[in-house]
Image (cartoon, rainbow, N blue to C red):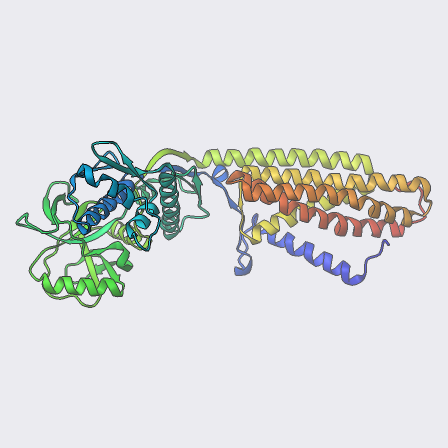
Length: 517
């Protein structure tokens, strides 16, 4: 029946006023800490930076194959088999053995009994193929192996990129996968992407190694340049510590040298290794190598057993802060190359906002005028409901500090259309009921009741589509589906609670009047 208790009326009123107040924080400066939340504007509305990064998996593939080369060498050594011409070239391992031992090699790497043959398990875990060319064998990644490696690198890169950007405090970044070797980064409000590009372009592969002056080292040496690009030194290939052993890194001011340094703390394993290395290497230079360049190479004066230390290298406070950030977030599994870059200026963003708002206002005014002419007093009720519905939608988006994009505005416009559609269905049904029922109260109640199924069917099917778009889509599509999905709930609430309440109040006072609608 057309009846609302006082408690329900108070509830509807309080809910409406609450969300109107929340939504108003987007248009006015609200001092209360409780309601300082606002809707964030997306990249297409407030401007910002768009970066498409491609993962260079070549070093990862080379490293995996290098490890496999060591595996093969260990196998032949255990089996006392003489191996010839073992080398890695063009992402392919090549080697040869005596003719009478070829079948033994094939059998070894095809025996699935991993308990008897541990080499097979390790070999297959990397999705590698052993190919008999004739004079020699070739080992390379299978197609599936390359796909798994790329997916793994992409997942790691995505997480580390997210950590680095979150450390900077960028507002509402959008970080997504593209294919199996690309990462999309959208940074709303950031119109100078140089620092971000610098941070994302560094692998941040940190190692601690000894300087080898005599060029003779059992682990081998390599010549590396210092960061100035001029000086160079021979560095042992033996890695004492890596960035994986770091617990924390922070920029600090060294009181003794009065320069900015990076203070780091090691985990338990790292502290033990570092203490042992510094105790046996007193008087030696310890090279701190980042992405293949020597940052600094201090001389070890005493044992460092505390598990903490400093990295110096003529840093500014900004560069020390960025290095600390890189070390805390971890090393990328592979280098990232920027293959596409766009900067959306704030003027373009404002144009997008104006275009969206003009479209919303024009559509809203046309709807209001049409409904008012068509249904008169009930058109006025519908228009009031539409305005409250918009405030409800904006209020919910504000509470969750959602990011609004142009497609999101399109979702709001579509919500207005669906809200009007629901009211039209109800009023047209009421007209049908009034033809057979002289009692206005019964006719209006029947109109609301009998139109409910059609309205729910339409909104539920639209809601299902919005849910699918949200989970299957990405970026702008999610923004559209989110506003549309929330709009469906606010529409049903406004139609069956707010509009119906106002209708009840009017019809109850004019229940004897003919031609109400």
